[in-house]
Picture 1: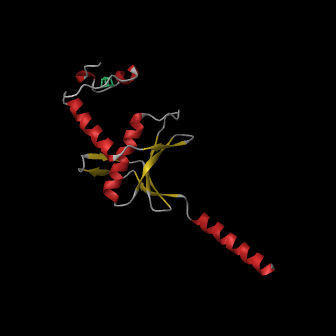
Picture 2: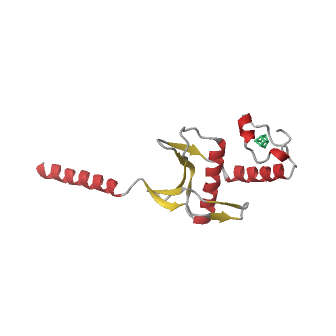
Amino acid sequence: MLLFLILLAVVILYKFLCSRKKAKLTPYMLEYFLKITDPVPLCGKPDVVWMNRKGILIVGDYKSRCHNKVYDSDVIQLSVYRLLVEKTQQKPVASFGYIHFKGASRKVKLLSEREIIDLYHRYWKIIEGQVKPNQAGNNSYCQNCSHQSICSSW
Ligand code: SF4
């Protein structure tokens, strides 16, 4: 019986040490410039890409603002980073990412490749005047928008 208890204690200790040895997430890439031309031309520099214990990459972005609100633009930015990582690293990439604020982190579901492609084409159609942009839900967005001169909603 004593031998069994000692053996059990050794197994528990071994599992505990193994679980401590490997962190849940390890940094895979930091502020590395990535560029793709297919399926659409995109480039960017993800703040951080983590790798989990299963070898899956997870994109992350750091925000310095003092509140923890996640905007649509944050999700689009992180989704573009996800697509850049997926197309350049030949490794599985999670369909979610993390936005890190000063005192907290938020897990966000990212847009699919199809949604990013659609947004890309919509963006250029708006720039070329073929499509009218939707009126921004909040007028304060328009105050600093660089597309005011071509926007008929402004
Ligand atoms: S100015 Fe036009 S394009 Fe810019 S945010 Fe406002 S509605 Fe959108």
